Amino acid sequence: MRHLMSPLDMTVEELDKLMTLADDIRLHPDKYAHVCDGRILATCFYEPSTRTRLSFESAMMHLGGKVLGFASADSSSAAKGESVSDTIRMISCYADICAMRHPKEGAPMVAASKSRIPVINAGDGGHQHPTQTLTDLLTIRSLKGRLGDMTIGLCGDLKFGRTVHSLINALIRYPNVKFVFISPQELRIPDYIREDVLKKNNIEFKEVVRLEEVMPELDLLYMTRVQRERFFNEEDYVRLKDFYVLDKVKMELAKQDMLVLHPLPRVNEISIEVDEDPRAKYFEQVQFGVYIRMALIITLLELEVA
Image (cartoon, rainbow, N blue to C red; front, side, top):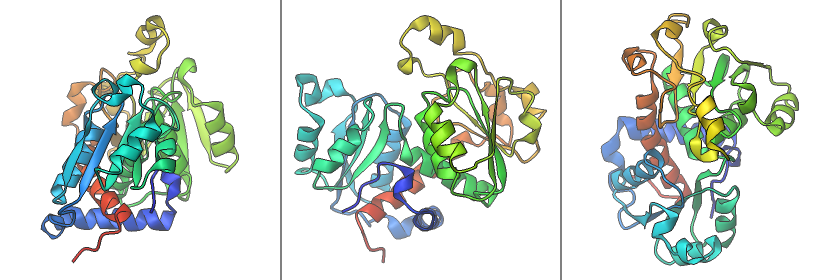
């Protein structure tokens, strides 16, 4: 039995195989419509989510399976003090596979250690968000035709953004990837990412404050929101929440084939006028998320496709 806690749980070869399966699902959905007949996915979400939870549920339903679960800690026995370990032992009696989101870093790992079914980390605090990273990789590979040889700008909340941390860890395994980190001083990438991931692996990167000055050199711009739920006080959040706003004027500085991605939800960091730009791919990114989660469910359940 296998779990997914981090994108690094899979080798580059395994990721390539997973994305190839997702591509086949996208092209031949009918072939996979009954792969999960009789199977149940449990979605255990201890903090709010729209895209990730519904994407998992949509993925399982498109495979012919069923879904059960809860959408917040308040609507589960966690409100009564039940531990994650006890919850997953109970869920293991009801379902065949579990997707878990939790505000505490490492909680899905604890669940995996006690589970009798595969557990997928659907986001743990500011730590990891592996299925968003799989979505991002599939989106980039599908739209760019490659995962290496590019300059990637990551903009916004780079300190608390688990999507950013996961994506950096995944992309450093591909050749000639350069990073440009765009953030205010208070939201720079954590020291452990800078030292233990980037410098340790001799990855080329730079850190800047102004988005405009680096737009012309980017092949991909990954925008993130400033996350109110990660701040300890409202003043800091209000001061930083509109630090970056991507608009038409800034997009005019970019390459004609640059892609704009965003893990969503969007607040104010991408103007709605950018939605009409053919380089804006964040809603296509959402659709790719369903395909990669379908592929992941099939893979972790070790199901055969006729």
